[in-house]
Image 1: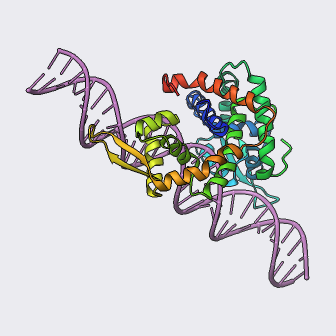
Image 2 (image 1 turned 30 degrees about the vertical axis):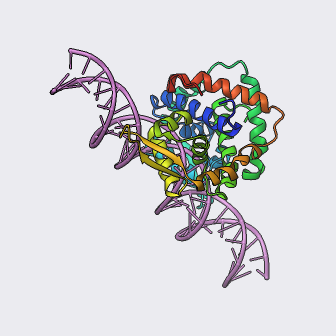
Image 3 (image 1 turned 90 degrees about the horizontal axis):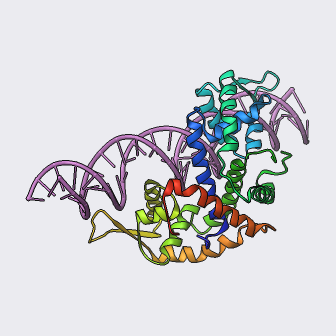
Length: 140
Length: 140
DNA sequence: AATAAACAGTCAGCAGGCTTACTATTTTCA
DNA sequence: TGAAAATAGTAAGCCTGCTGACTGTTTATT
């Protein structure tokens, strides 16, 4: 496995970690993708396009993630009065509750690593190096 | 984004890198998941369960990946005479060709990173720390 | 003012992860 | 030997990425 290309190591590690999360999250009625959204909404409402931009996914993907969150009663969508193209997405009390319960898991589920800080730094650099081409200049 | 949990950084980085790959690979008629399989098969035939184990995916996932590779003419499945439960998977000349053309991309597509070696080492440790619970003891 | 362009969101369909549930074959062992 | 257990593979259905094509609304241009 030492011979694997770095991209493959990256996606394998990502899948393994995500799976460990998923196990913990499903007991709170949440998924990985949903948790990200609740995180963003915990500080206030947002449009779908803004949520997509911050999560670095396509608006179509975000649309379906919100479908599921809405189905489960964690968010609500309403038309924006001043711009009827826009939907304002708001977290519900149930959503805020689920987020609060799940929030600490994010930190604790990650395995102890001697290189944790270095890993974070390298990932941030890697993201910075690749994302501009795909997502343009983002400030968060 | 500095405040993001490490798991989220990991999956975001993984998706961005994978997307850059995908662009390059599709010009060779390949996908990420397919390339891994061709890589494993380039040194000889294997059973589906063995391919799944080495790629760290479920056999059901591998089954469908092989469906697509077979559909595209890159691999062939045949029943194992000595154990009729088993399918022996073999790479075709077309598959070997596609693999050869794509092989170098894996290394060159990855962005230059000052921390490349440290990143690899951290990822290998992370995989080692998480995979045993899910995949048992593997020797590769 | 009318038309063109940009924008916000959705739908349909594919890929590749996952789980649960199934068939068919082989192995074990009572 | 014959029944139970293990093994290899598939099917169906969910989630979350993606692309391409579409609707409806707003903004820009002429």
